[in-house]
Image (cartoon, rainbow, N blue to C red):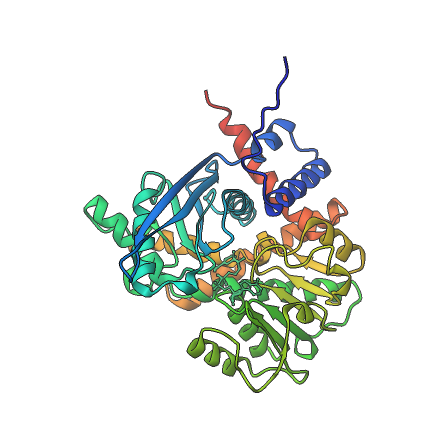
Length: 429
Ligand code: NAD
């Protein structure tokens, strides 16, 4: 008697379905061992927890939390903790898979993991944030550790959350364990350059793409180009500033509440200052108000989706006019939209390459913490730039070799390394 071996537990979200679709496509192109592909389609381990929190008004609210390890073949699990109202097991599993691919692609000795709590972070006070983070850390403590699985910030969390996680873990162990998280404040073992690393990397690869496209006959000059950035958080705001500092005209930026547009270019440092003071772009008066959908449809050269997954789909892909897209967010473009855009000449630098700067400097932070020897910011940035360039070149070479877009090429490059490691280690028992 045959029966379906899958319960459908992991693959309920579009993000997971897309990730598997992309993986299958890349696997087919490279002739990947079917046993390896089968293993990579599913995460290694997941933990679902409920997290009771005493709220400021005295009531107790219970939140859902997850930690998922997709693969630990190359090293400890690595991946952020997301606080967002849409978080679920399938989405976290997909993001863990992307982390595996990202770490393998850029050559780190790390696996892939992700965590999250289904909560609207904007509704919580600082005390509630702290209680939620500490209790979550305690609930998943058997899964994390410097040699096991190392969380970092993601949407809705920052260096302060990492400090609370590090402190909670250290309290339980009886001594300070800085290596349990990355993205910590510098005062407790964080790395210089970590907060800016993802946004910087997103822009480094745009520069590499321009150089490559110019060799193929284009005549792009970054300071004559226009850009728009969707999502103005830790990744988007830095990417916008890096573009602005290079003379590129950033005509639009947006956050959860909507966007701002100025055809002559926004004063990005001023917008960041407004954002830092008000925690939103809403209310900024020196630019025209637009929607996120308006932003995607602008006649610009460069688009950076740096908010959340699934923002460019078959519903709006035909509106997108950008010539280069650097994926700051994880999974912002669905497989269908990606194929359409690439067929129409858009050069897409995929998430696992474009936003790898964060995990690269997280790796530097982990190494610095283990050695208790800290580097200056120039050293961090130089090493980051070198790894990003190397990864970009390897992906571009595979795009030529397999005659495919950068997304498939990035996955192929990643899986080439990972599958060798999997086959060498063999299957237990
Ligand atoms: P963040 O919380 O600092 O910022 C998120 C931004 O997106 C905010 O401006 C928020 O208002 C906006 N946003 C949220 N939902 C939106 C929506 N539906 N429409 C428009 N805007 C929306 O998060 P972040 O750390 O900047 O992460 C952004 C993306 O980058 C995520 O996909 C994350 O997984 C990815 N990423 C982050 C890092 C990192 O180092 N922080 C590294 C790699 C990838």
